[in-house]
Image (cartoon, rainbow, N blue to C red; front, side, top):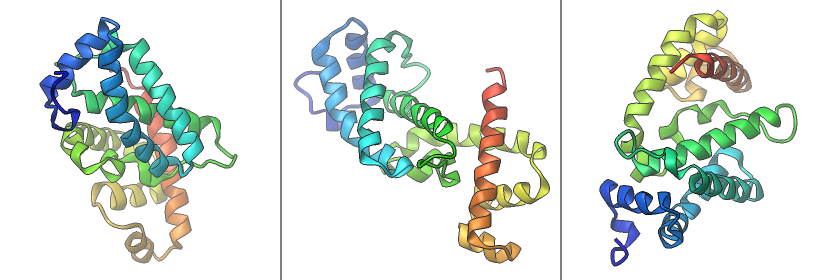
Length: 194
């Protein structure tokens, strides 16, 4: 593993690397850190639009990866999926805490494929489908106006502007309905037992 370039690592190479991290191997952790940190930073900036906050989230993600490495199971997910899920959850936690302050939840960010680096989209496909199923499952809990917008944007993959024109409402209304719907859906999805 050490002679290989992390850019060419396969899922199995990353699993081997994480086995070493689980044994507190700092060199292996360094490989993971240096490979994922810049990618995570871009990922978080796309979500939150704030470079300083992004750097903090990256640090928290990597600290969690080190401290909770024993929880990583290469049979259940790839390392990239696990790392990005940790980062995304930290972003969601921050957005919940910041609600009403300068950072805002952007409904555009609920789908992982919208903001993942292209090389990770394949890893997210099963999660994307699972999330779609959960959205469909809880859609009836939303008011009809939010249901229509969520269905159009997330299930039919229509652009926000097209949805605004289709329902003859301002673009801002589409976004705020999505934001409210996302928060309600996330609460329902989070409350569901695994």
